Image 1: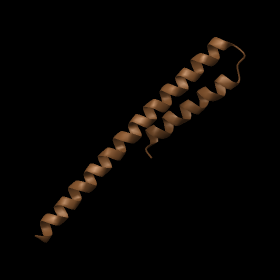
Image 2 (image 1 turned 180 degrees about the horizontal axis):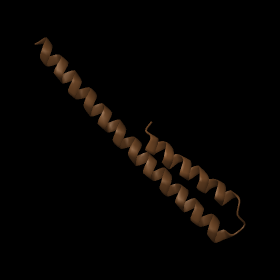
Image 3 (image 1 turned 45 degrees about the horizontal axis):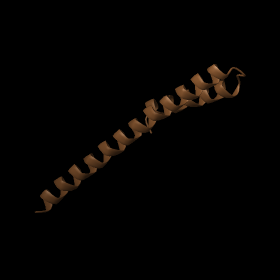
Image 4 (image 1 turned 135 degrees about the horizontal axis):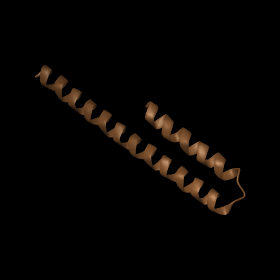
Length: 69
């Protein structure tokens, strides 16, 4: 997992703590929306990194197959 993903997830956790620690409905809602946005960014980056790694594995497999032939 990259440092950026860790950062996004840390920010989401901070927003969750902020939401849990307030009695103000608007502040809680804003914090929960922010947490959801941070998690969405982390999820998007996880999917992109996973896809990139899979593509690199396929390229490497193709190179290895070409060397054998």
